[in-house]
Amino acid sequence: MDGRIGILGGTFDPIHLGHLIIAQEALATCRLDRVLFVPSADPPHKSVADVAPAEARAGMVALALEGQPRFELCRIELDRTGKSYTVETLRQLRGELGSGTELHLIIGADSAVEMSTWCDPQGVLDLARVTVMGRPGFLPDEVDDLIAARMSFLDSPLLEVSSTQIRFRVRTGLPIRYWVPDNVARFIENRGLYR
Ligand code: ATP
Image (cartoon, rainbow, N blue to C red; front, side):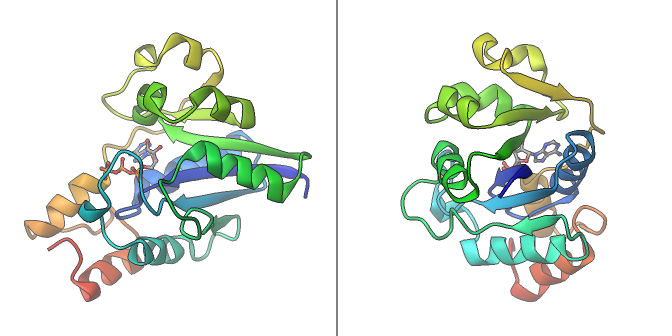
């Protein structure tokens, strides 16, 4: 299949407006046909015991994407065993979608700064165009030079929202309305997540 596909990987514990806004900005600016949201099964830099079950995280992603036909939940990492390395996901997508499809990996500036610690960062850059979206507290200068040279940096609205803050807010009884879509907030409440 030809076209331009955005890929936004994450733990999504939970998905929030920061994720949705960078996906929407990338969709418009990079003229993407669709954006795949790829929840990790076993995030390389987090302990699986510390995150909500993969099915709950994927369920929240599906809810958050309702009503935006160009956004899709992609289960590729959930259906695979072992650590969820981005390079493997891109290789698999490249195989499934064919060489005519442009892959655009969308990441926040914090991930760009960390990318030198990823599994095979040059492999990631060979497989996809990498677009970096601003994130408060992280500067493009902090990105490893060899990696930064192969990325595009996009100006996007800076939102100081993180899944960590949302989990903290739920645990301490603070509202999360407008931090996550309403249906995601209801899911968190009904499942008793993050208490
Ligand atoms: P946590 O607080 O649990 O570490 P997070 O909010 O950083 O989570 P992830 O699911 O780990 O969310 O992030 C997935 C991707 O989205 C990463 O590339 C991250 O940089 C990016 N991202 C998340 N929140 C924002 C934000 N507010 N602005 C820009 N990028 C973001």
